[in-house]
Image (cartoon, rainbow over all chains, first blue to last red; front, side):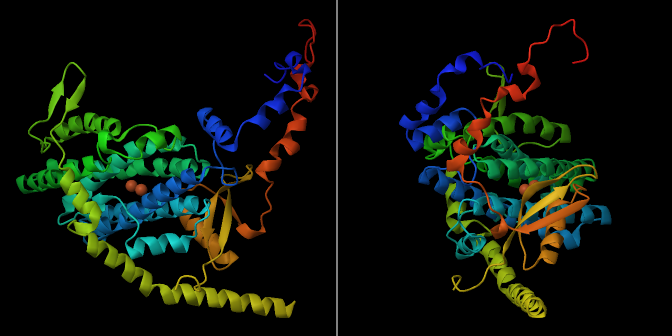
Length: 331
Length: 97
Ligand SMILES: [Fe+2]
Ligand SMILES: [Fe+2]
């Protein structure tokens, strides 16, 4: 492979070609060739802004996503379940950290990002604004919400922006256990007493549609899809990913002996896909706008945690500065 | 208010996965000092035994080459293909070369 260009290298054709093309064209051809864009490379401003928006929304979702499940850590039904849930919630916090780091490589500070979340100007996934009234919700979240997240995230492992793609590789490696522990909880409940099975069914009823909404609006109404696909930030459309998710999840529900809460759902022999009923996009818009059942509670919890932790952050910094001053004096 | 509040500095994290392997960059972390950077890196990047050793270095202490200079720096190596063994045609009957 090293020598294959030897005979054709006679002229210095390699250098001249690049001078004529613009930065933007060169950027796009790098993306087209499946090369990665790295932090110090030139990139269009809109690409940078799109990434900051998408990566930070993703990071905020991981962070807020700790809350609905975190509610159940003290009430998990066994020590094993508690240890697993703590590990899972800790992973989600870690995912938020990987993603904030990736966003920071684009020139925005961690403080700015967190401020946007706490001020309510940044968005996060609508799914985390639903409540978790029963233990079965922890199972349904792992199975469906993490399942949908995996479906969304796997293609981003090949995203054109290097730091985002690398963060996503780490995240995807960790997600699989999240989904499996959730399914295991559902399986245990579905095979349990009649009341436990009812609990599992009730959780599926409440989480099914919000999980489908996680993939975002219909392709026809999604504003950013075309440009994001051209930039290879996105590899599949919202509807494509949603369809994949439905196709693999419905048989899992059947295995559990639970019923997917969609009266129009049916298998289509011709397309070899499930056909599903209409999604209530009004609900999606409402939750996104801040009117979901838990939007205020989630943000308030984050704000309180941030405020109550302030003295720790400041004290740690003051201590380190004092330590450094002492060291330089001694030297 | 955030303008005057000071951020914890950023550190780059390098992890040796197993003894015998080199330390490899895995990401970054915020911490007030080196000790805390190592502790946070341990919590964040080695939850599944991904490492046996951690290096941290202040991000601001890293000097990186400029992508704009990539051609000047790296192109000259491109036509020196005689540095690779496959450049030399050796008859098949000669063994062990
Ligand atoms: Fe996650
Ligand atoms: Fe997860």
